[in-house]
Amino acid sequence: MTLLRVNNLTVRSGAKTLLDSISLEIDPRTWVSVIGPNGAGKTTLVEALSGVREVPKDSIYIGGKDVTTFSERERAKYLSFVPQNPTIPKGMSVFEYVSLGRTAHQGAWRSVGPADQRIIETVANRLEIAWLLNRELSSLSGGERQRAVLARALVQESSIVVLDEPTAAQDIRHQLETLSLLRREVEEQEICVISTLHDLTLAGQYADRLIVLADGRVAIDGPAHQTIRDSRLSDIYGLRLEVVTIDGAELVVPAPH
Image (cartoon, rainbow, N blue to C red; front, side, top):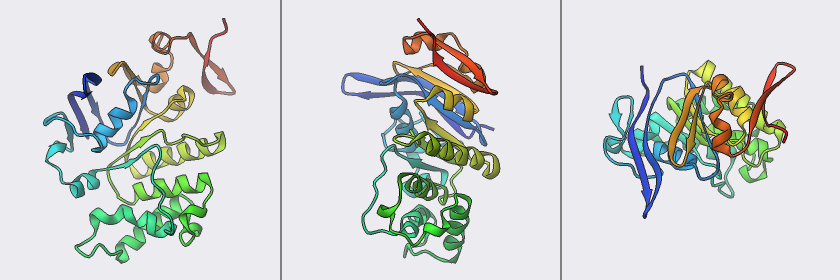
């Protein structure tokens, strides 16, 4: 069953075409990573999917419904979005910040009820940040803060989580921790993850499917383990790439001259 369908999506900014006739179908319980060189349209695509960018009618459907008919509250029940540089409010506790993800499920008074509290605590335990809930958000380390941002998205209980460069500005240990958490959420909570990633090796290791963008178009779309071996990647990135295996892990590296 198709969860998200993109139908001939074109996005322009002035005279420049950012996305050109994109068509995709994405199933539940899968991780799709969007890759491609700088300027290929990756961020534009995830912003269009998440509602940050306005899209034409009949171009994106979630759960069989045209997203242009959604209220902001209805969209939030289907999809949560984590931007590359999320706003971190000052003077807010981790619990208060994470609880913002429950807004779409709350009544007119927008207060955190017992059901919200249980969901927040459950997600915090899964992400191993329950002990941080009473801390001030701004006092957290970069890795802890990234988990809090992810927790806010997950407490929405949406079927799709969209992330723009979820490992940006993280060291390699925190990158692997973040991606492992997302992989576990896909498998155990049966959500769909759509992410952009710069690192081809990590995209190939963690995602189920890779969509390669070039000049605003879909250049390659296929299973991750096959796509990282596609000879067209070298042309798209402008350098010869090879896949090497070290201790069972497949790494995408530039070929020696």
